[in-house]
Length: 95
Image (cartoon, rainbow, N blue to C red; front, side, top):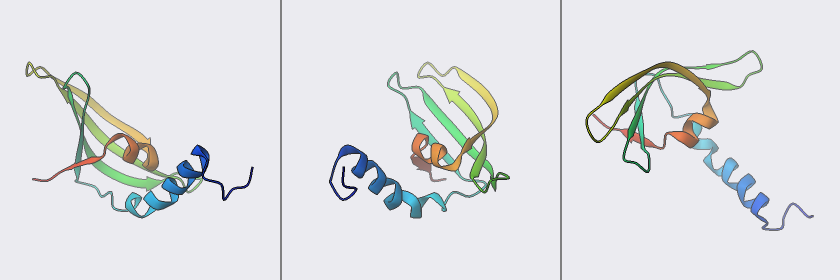
């Protein structure tokens, strides 16, 4: 298959390169959230963004969960590759 064809793979590759500019805007201290289908809010506070030994950027963050009935769960510190983090947490919380 020619890489110039607009197959689903071609669109995925194009979107990865298009989104690349946004990947570098993640900074320590920022908070992101996502809302699940059951209305549970997942909040991630960025602790740091660092490269691993292979040069792949990773985000270290603290995650918490809040259910609509106001139950709160502290998920602790976690780490994801920068690309995975930006795919998962798309909404910046502005204070």
